[in-house]
Length: 91
Image 1: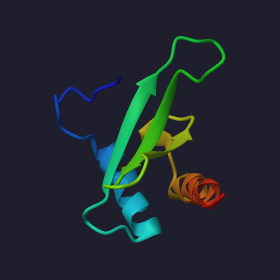
Image 2: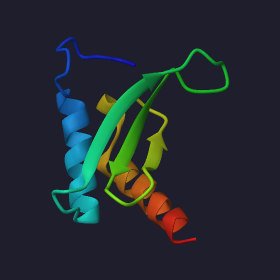
Image 3: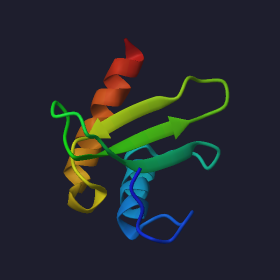
Image 4: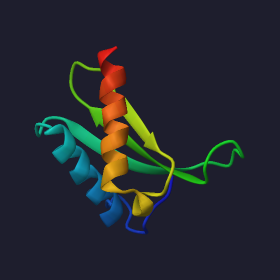
């Protein structure tokens, strides 16, 4: 996992992605949105990806991945990833 140097503190980039998620899905306060950057050593995956996890009591955790560091993620990419997540959730 990557860090911005402030142990336990969210980076501004991850906070920005989290806010876009809340706005895009109009999430109630009881839904937890986690935004994490993960590093990967496997040559088949990107060096860093941003993972969005939606946690809600009584539901399985739902995750979306964007294959870029949070600092490079755009609002449009968040909306697209969440749209795909919701589409898969309905199936």
